[in-house]
Length: 85
Image (cartoon, rainbow, N blue to C red):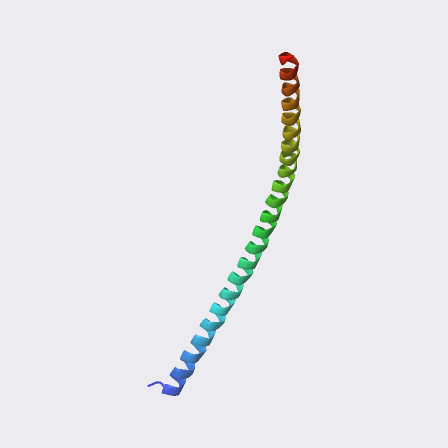
C-alpha cells in the first residue's frame, strides 16, 4: 500500500506542473493579444491617414463648388438684370 503522504506529494507535484503549464498558456495568450492590439492600432492609424488624405480633396472641392455656385448666381443675376433692361 502506498503511503498517503507520498500520494499527496505526487498530487501536489502534478498540480504544480499543470499550474506552470496553464500560467505559460495564459502568458502566451496575453502576448498574442498585445501583438494583435498593436497590429490593429497600426491598421487603424493607417486607415485614419487614408481618411485624412481623402478628406482634403473633398474639402477643396466643396470650397471650389461653393465659389463657383456663388459666381454662377452672380452671373445669372447680371444676365437677368441686363435682360430686364
